[in-house]
Length: 277
Image (cartoon, rainbow, N blue to C red; front, side, top):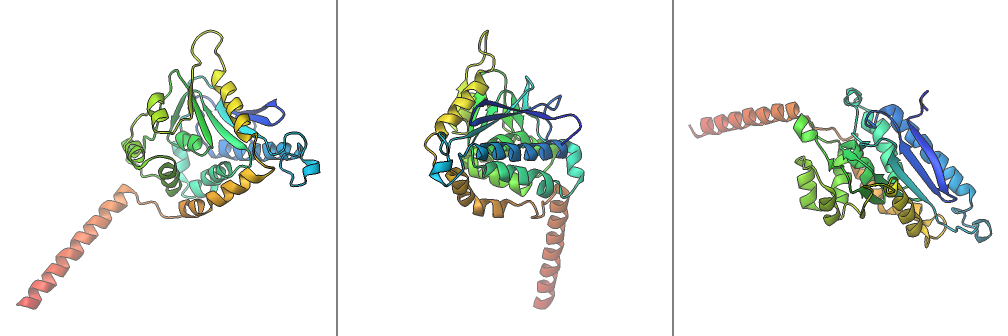
């Protein structure tokens, strides 16, 4: 945990937990924030299991059976998350060591997870939202996109896999090309489950409130401990295929590879020409 907490944890219902990212100015996903998020996930799971909700013994389950939801949102008014801090990319092991484990943990979390997107979600912030089971978003200012293409950066393998698994091929293509998605477009593509009207007096916090309601409703019929086990099975092959230890091909490396292929083709053509003579 960092000296200054980068998020808060609240429990608005006996089996509902809310993690609010609070790392000004835009919730950049630094190693410190990711480590703190991973620790928070452990706290939530421990508290949920203490209710008996994840217990296989019917006598120990309590009145909530397998119910439980985790909502991830932002305490900042403009950004859900603006993605990675560029300095993270200096570490060649950042994705494998810091980012990916938290996303995989979230994807297979035993509670129903909901991203309450109350502002912009860019790049790694978009992937964070996609790693949840459900997504609801503000009707106000807020866009979702991957902007790596404008920076000349490829995506790590885990990003590619999560995007291609959550989006249709056309939507994935447009996302990779840097499209800035609006809420109605995301709803039409099935990326969002709901757009929540939170504009105007008396509607503050409507996105978070609806996210909690949605998560609790979705988890009501879940048998104790089964949701996490189902997701572990569902995403097992996906997670194995998406690990970022596969080398990422940088643009400069692609250019070098292209020139090497051209030289090889020239040498082959020259040998064939000499053989004919």
